Image 1 (cartoon, rainbow, N blue to C red):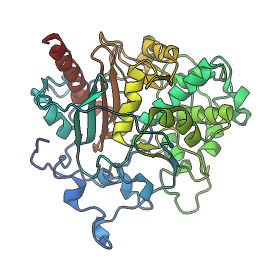
Image 2: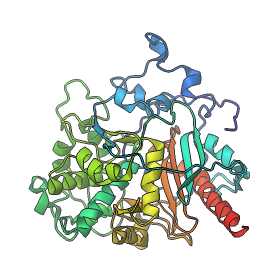
Image 3: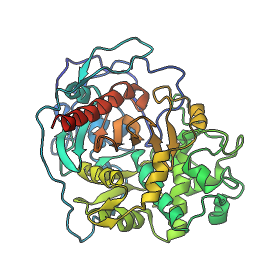
Length: 452
């Protein structure tokens, strides 16, 4: 990767949950605040958790929140289960599915113009430079199912797992959409039909579809800059933040969800709230009678022929964190994307119904999406926990804080899986380089096809 000179270190700690991208922005991203660049903040260079034992100044822990502070998070994102309770998602006893390799030497030089921002224009950038700019820990590009590009950096290796953050939501959204297609989950039914525990909450009269598409009306904010926002109660209940002395609040996510109150009318507009993903995970457990790990293994990881076990972060009561607790290998994330690109077929087996993927690709209501205020995503929509571009390539993606991404471009027959540890939780700071870079890679691969 291209290296840049160090920048001043951010003074205030950056604490971000494993939950959503920071919501509404009134204009395109301004220049992010200055921090150590990717080279200077490399966890191996900084020596985090090295030594026997590591010296106090190089230790990372859950209890003091250092695991979610920058630059420490550059180590913790690749070592999640060393910090919080987890449960394995076994790859299963079957053979590993092959991903052919034909690495190309021309892709680092692919260039693009970043999005213009409120702070002005940005110079042209190469693909290799974008990896550094976005604090990429690992990235794989598939073209027609073949690995044409693969890189790892920082604390992540090809045999390691990385926290996927809100990319997790898209796995559960796919599972729930499969259950709808099978008739086991009625998307028009009220949530309380399946989860009577949520009567009296915001979710009592919300439909399954409104939960899937995040158009529920809740008195719930994920504004990280507001110390009184409900997201902090959510984080404490989910074990994402340590409990303060004398804590008497909800001690699990399933204790927290009934406390969320309705505000407004369901279905009126899109609002990204991680509570929806937790309700969705609960619905999957209730309908299947399986744990989240069992459902993922049986329906996705086993049939995919994953090469590594995955694992899920757990809340204090042992419930899987549906909003962002999945940790997995980078190539297995790419396998999931490639299976979806192939309309759900993989190794001669239909893992996900083609109708489910077609519905996701059609997207949601673009007018309702505008209420979310995502200025870097004009014309996009949200469907079944997926972000839909509606561009001429039909691209859609899963997105997570700090740079996690799974990008599927059907026209270019391309899938990009990326893990990152950027200092900024919000994708609003990453989209101006990420989205043009992904599009440029797709067009480069298409041009190569046309020249043959």
